[in-house]
Length: 344
Image 1: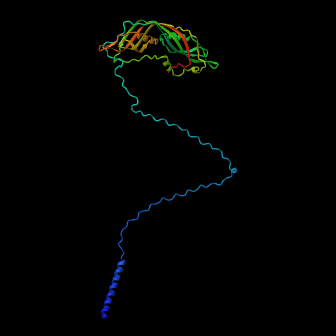
Image 2: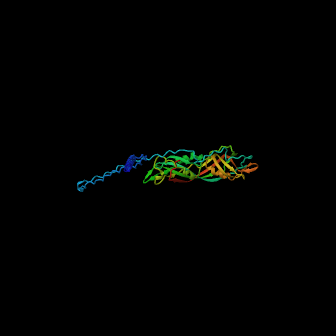
Image 3: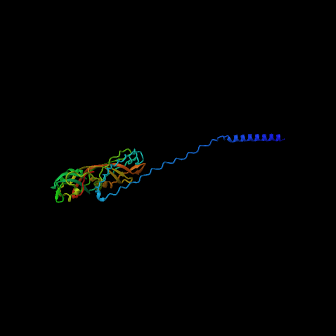
């Protein structure tokens, strides 16, 4: 009995010892490693800025020990050359409208019956004022050294007018206490008596759409003409606009006082449907003094109007006149102008 109990105790001890060795082996086995994600890289901070050394203040120096420094002028500023303006690029933009010249004369019409001059042309004796402008180089003694007719309303008398002017004498221009040479500018006020022209021949030709447009006669008013005198002052002497007193005519003989001879003139005139003339374009004239006289004369005439489809119509026509004329010319006054008559 006691032997059986001993055997059982021995078996229990052996089992207990075996179980302890197995548990010790289980505890000694390392666990299977599990992969883990790598840690995120930490942000790298920029290195701190290097400290700026504080400026060192030099030791104070007694004023008496330092001589005063001479003032140094600033360097001159460099000359600035302005850049040239950029070149303009020309493009075909619509800045100025481009028009085509008309293929037909806009003054012309097509009429079955053209206008006609009246059977008798009436003229009257008339008095017409006119102005002639002259430049005269006058020396310090008052003698004219050069003369030029700048604007002459009666070219038929230009030769006689030039002879008369050459015999004129002047009080010379003065600047301060001295007589000086200068260019005088004179306006000769004329009164022209025009007798009724004789042996007048007249011709009227219709202006059609195919008629070429002529160049008109340029004879503007005196005021408009004077505005064109903007050219250079003639050389020689003192300018007329800086003298204290201009040259003044003293002896003025005048032999260009009459003319008897041929004349001619040409106009484009608009003959209205009632036969009157209200518009005229001067094209030619032997003497411009005739332009106003002839316009006044034709305003009293009654033309036969042109007809289109049996109805009177307005029409433009070329009127040519020629004949004999007589002038009587009187020099009424001479004005000395304080300006140059040099051409533009």
